[in-house]
Length: 344
Image (cartoon, rainbow, N blue to C red; front, side, top):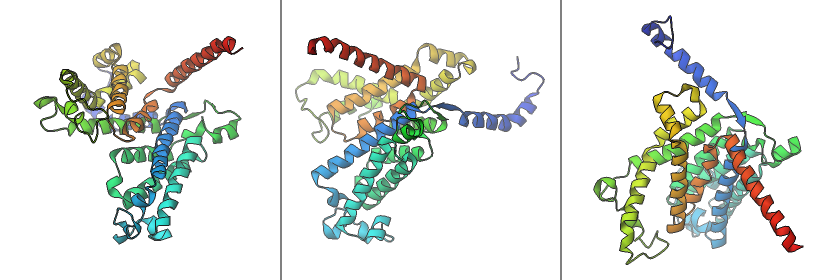
């Protein structure tokens, strides 16, 4: 039977753009609790702040973002036009510290929820200036988190778990409803990163020619945390890990379909019901978490694993986020009650 009784196929085709636009507007107008996006805001800011503090501790701020005439590694002072920070404050070593403090201050304000939108804009600007001054140091994860912060500029992620929310409502957890579309855009951004990475994997290391990528990188002393020389029995497991990586990185379109049918189960057909039944969404997220934790434990990849995991709260609906937070709260409360008699 037709889903639109009384309409001919030509009529349905003619009204398709209008119906699609109405669905898009309805989707963009959805409201939800701000908690999931607020956690993403906090975690992303903390990861970026940690990265900047490490650079400061190592004393490489001037080397990375200072002019080459004063010990910097980049030639940005010779560009025409120069990066805006050099235009405003001069191509001096001190400008690198101004830029560093701008990035640190933006991250702190973003994490605490102080003028969250402005703080996110400052982080985007400072990160972009760092990239212009020292392009070689602008890693893929820097570009990804800069894009996430740009989405936060247009969101209301500071509505809860923030100082501005506390000042406005008198409590940290306001449960305020905000537009849901920024969280959806974060999901699309992260899924695109995974899918494009999987799609562009070529060469002899990947599944179609040996599945040895993980084995090879674990033997590269630049990336590997441990020397696994002589552990040949691990090779089949690394092949399985390579296959799992490819499956994870090539299936974001299926994940987004599963996400949609979980949000709108009434629209699920045979495929949607199957994805919901096998809990594909949860399986994919589990693979993602284990993938990044595995990278964190076995390889030196900078902030990449933690930076990607910082975006994972956006994958959770706010009610799911609250259930997880409630579980942690109950366990923490139970642990305190259990230790109270011993301390007494």
